[in-house]
Length: 637
Image (tube, rainbow, N blue to C red; front, side, top):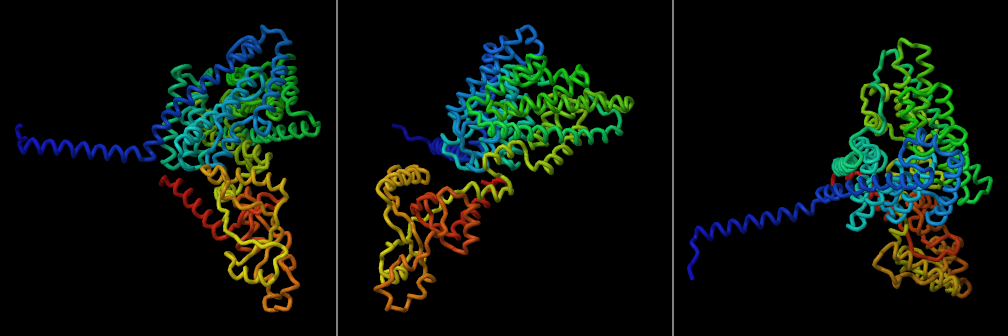
């Protein structure tokens, strides 16, 4: 056996060292969050792009069954169909969809962008993939039968649920989950509109809530990938084809564009108000939830049958015709007003779908009508009413969505026309500011507030609402029975963990069994690994509390020891917190009570004692969450 030469040994050692360094580098590389996010964003973008294509194909499939033909050219193709088909398709389809929504969807309402915003702000980006798939199917069916809604919101929701599911499978934390949620949203918007830039900014502006590089890079990757997948199938074409390139004819037009912003704000506010009014009318009529889409479908079908098929579906062809300046003034006004009514009824009734396409439709008709009037008044200064149609689309959509930046970018990408940049910006900003001042919030936040979910108050308030008392409840506490003698109370209070005793009594057996089940659910919520609830406190009913202040009169008077009990000294009906109270409510309760420790119960009906909450721990938890949020915004891990 020959002995290797020193040079050969040196080369072998160098090679092994290089491989070892490479392996160490690869391991470090694989542990980098940005690398993981980038790879996941690539996969998610491709998946969301494919799902957007499948969603559009599903709409076409339902539309063939309901109306007899696929595609977006409803106004042209439906002329060959009998009037009763336009009437029956949304009516019968609405009945079936109403039953399915009532049976399968949580809260008996469809899902959309509002639920994505809620998940991002309050649930750390966690969403249910099963609900996302069911919501997408119902939305595809709604659009296919002719409901006057948009297709972009459902794709955004579906992409977000896929992103959330991917984060759940990988056991990612809150920050990375919200970023993947934004990736799914960006890819969905980009694939739906062939608008990658707008997809990025919509996700960051509406869902993620910041523009840090840590979120920006993966969102861009997902948006670009979703666009590429969509273009591979549909080609690289803008959503709307302009007959000519519009440009500002004179700087004297800008007062007209500013005034158009005011008019578009009025149209946006009217649309949102109409949705609320129709919801109120349905509630007052006590119409069953499952029957409401049928009524809405009957209304839309009737309007289509009497001469307004433009209202069916997403309305892209009608918007294209308005951009081509093919509608007279009376038709523009009629279509704008009827679209507000038709979409409001469909959304309020419970059809699945979004509001972006309807907002573009309403904006096109509003801008076109305004442009015709302005052109007739000042023909030598006007760019043509087609330009006002384009500007109106951005102004109304930006006001309804509450996302002026991404909407401005989206208008440019939808039309491939950048000559009206300043005009679109002026009208959109003015319309958005007026809508915010008079209405106060976007359509999506308004939807959540009507469901009792408030995201107002900035990031700090949203963080407080995202954290529940159950996440910081302390199971260490001391209890006494109501009949405990005062001497024993005195001795126990000296050794009590928090200088306070909780006066409890056993719950009845039936209530105890029910509450033990609730305790197990609570344990699983707090710690998924604890499924048996063995460490939960016994089923005790809280009836009062005792502190040194309550004991002050009997502290040194031993003559009362044989006569007084805990029931005589306690504060009955004490101030408590519930497990499901958020930190915003908890802060208010602590502030109003002046206490630093409060008992926690499962709910305020039966006062089953769960533990104790401490004000200092509450504030420390909030501070940690706020610090982490600030680090996320700066792009730090």
